[in-house]
Image (tube, rainbow, N blue to C red; front, side, top):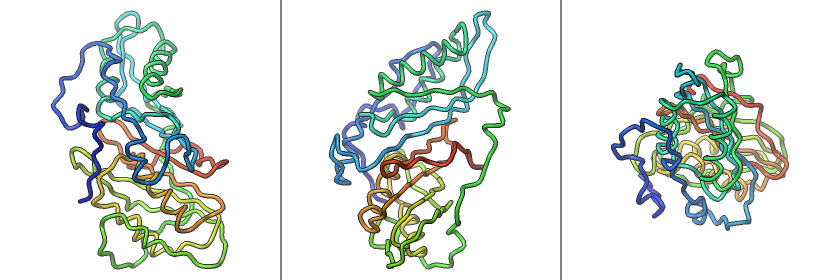
Length: 278
């Protein structure tokens, strides 16, 4: 199992027994500098080869209204890929739970507090949307494009290797996806299951090789965000596409799902969507 645990995790709450907070505490958020994980990929600070966002959904969000009655909602957060820091997921969960017994005047007051606290931790503006638990916007959808998962291939490699990525001479524009992505938490080793979408214009990717490459993350330990950046930089270097988008939709864990996307300048992801496993 390949492991990549930067020194920035030394004091992180992830993987430790932590008492759940009883009252609002912005100090629970634990920022992690992105640069430590980007350096091994050859990404220099201030010279990102991509644009993108980390999209989070929080399904365990509750607070008290001004009269003490509980309110529940689902939150969507968007954290820009060029922010200096990502935010560790367990600290984010603890922070959100600190609102459980906190009285707030309105949903707008909660959004303002969330945006201010998360922006302070990330070092960049974070957008927040709240949804009712039955909101149609949260209905599961399907990834666009062709699914690779029925390809009958033999696999013997479970650590990331760009050698699997092979391209032909024909230039194409296509969207491909797989639900076989799995990586592991860089601290606890717990499995992180996900689906990945790749949209590109450039030399045609060999589909069997691409599927082997995606499966090769199966024993790799890293954050969701950095797995997507790893995939993006490998595809950019090996295939040299004119345009490229890589988006992962990770399965919910601890009431949170994380869906990072990275793209060449001008790329945007499909409209916000949730998969059945999220």
